[in-house]
Length: 56
Image 1 (tube, helix red, strand yellow):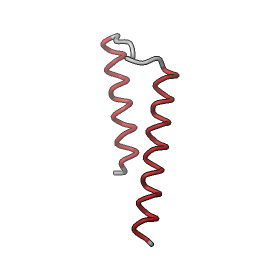
Image 2 (cartoon, helix red, strand yellow):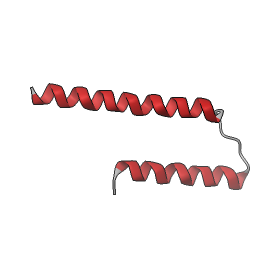
Image 3 (cartoon, helix red, strand yellow):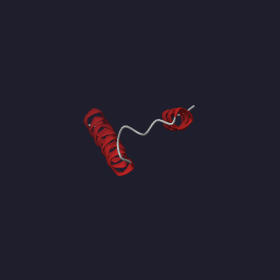
Image 4 (cartoon, helix red, strand yellow):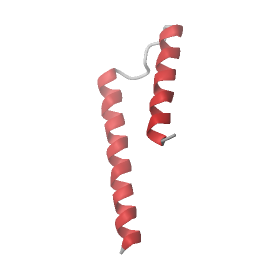
């Protein structure tokens, strides 16, 4: 199973648990999405740098 799929499934599971427990998300949705975008971009930059430094 891919890491992306596992991550997505974990997010859905946590979302369901929050809904069942009637807990609000610890961050406003817009802020949380910006944080996730930053994480994805950072991961992509590191992966690109690692590929270029090991290939050359």
